[in-house]
Length: 400
Length: 171
Image 1 (tube, each protein chain N blue to C red):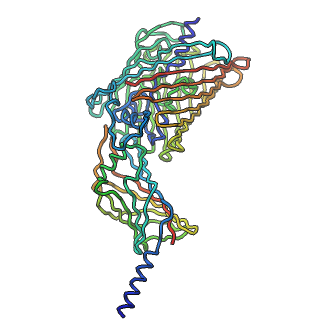
Image 2 (cartoon, chains in turn brown, yellow; image 1 turned 180 degrees about the vertical axis):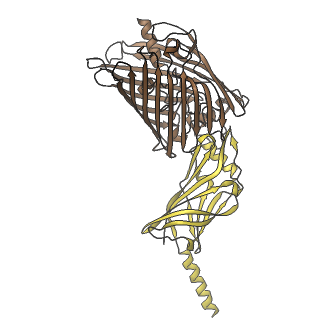
Image 3 (tube, chains in turn yellow, orange; image 1 turned 30 degrees about the vertical axis):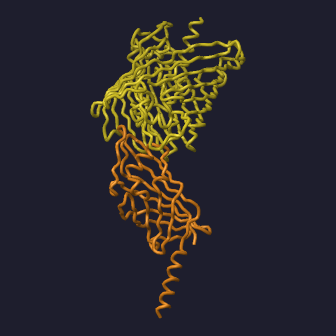
């Protein structure tokens, strides 16, 4: 039972992402300039590495205007790679402290978490791009595992697994504004926020941790409009085929000014057996999201999604997921975040799930981050007042 | 007769310099675009406005333009050869614009950037309450002024930019 709890917690708190939608504070509304994935998150381009050093890293002295980007921005903090080859790695380790009962801190549970040990490789050959990630994971990462394969939902414990979250090939067209990709790709939907256990990512199954799908996607990035539409043919890293969701996922975001971005997302998939309910289910998620930077120090992120689950012979379930976050740069390299979220999965639980996060992130060295999250949650239950819990999450993140 | 002519000339000259004078610092904006949806927004929190009796000239120092990225500011200054050409300016004939409350429209002015000049149309609007606040914008192509923009780590800024200026003047 205790092992199961550990696995569950690892599942909930693996945060391998490297995506900062708050970069709108610095006028970076398009993710494609800094990330290999044109819709953001994951591996940085050379330009992205440089901007991370210039705009994200903490400094004790102000940066000189003509100071070039140091070698610490390179792969492994020193290696200069040929232009065609982009290598990097993602290491995230943390500790979760959860009170055993009640809100008291003392007597709580201390859980070490190995969240991500991934390597990224991208080869740029003319207009084509070839990208793969590989790493190790534990049971929670079953949907992204290559070996050993796990059948979801039947209680298998797979222990350590070899993962491949992303693998795709693409071609850039129209002066790099368009990218056509095929392979295992992050689902284009909503904010690509770091907090993948957030309701908007978990309920829509669109996080960048394990919810990639195989398919074909077309992305577009221009000055005022960006978006991506993907035809989903299923996750071929799970079996049998009955569990594979097929359909589409898409988003489009328009920039009304250099600091106001508003977007819409839509997803419909169908699986012969949903990994949670084991029933043939058509899943809908449709919503709006926004990124606003009222000042150079503050970014406001918001997303609200309507959710529906259609299962033959049963009443449709209707739900929602909503998220709002304020990200304040206290000093360059030190961020404080306040997040509120709510969701309902359309079951008979009383009221919605709620959560509030009070977080801080310190980017203390090139591509290194220390993060602390205070998470307060109300979990809706059947016929009861709901369960309240508090968790403290500490993380060390290094991006090689 | 000669004295009268001299006096008239001096008075005319004096009236010319007593034309529009600037109130406050004003501001200027610069919006550029790059590959893969990159947008750059630069702000100068200071512009200089001068009236010589015939033209209104708005001048911005390149060193005052901040794009929220020190290295980019530095690259911009290098690409525009700010050490040789530290300012950019727009000169507008006073008789081509109407500085009165509610007036707006399109006029032509001469931009001087990177040591080169070019006549470019711009839009403007005026709001007066005692003093007059002028808000103007224009689309420029930096390559027309001989500015070569570098590619930096795979990202290239396009030569077409939008510039805007807002300032207050009074008579």
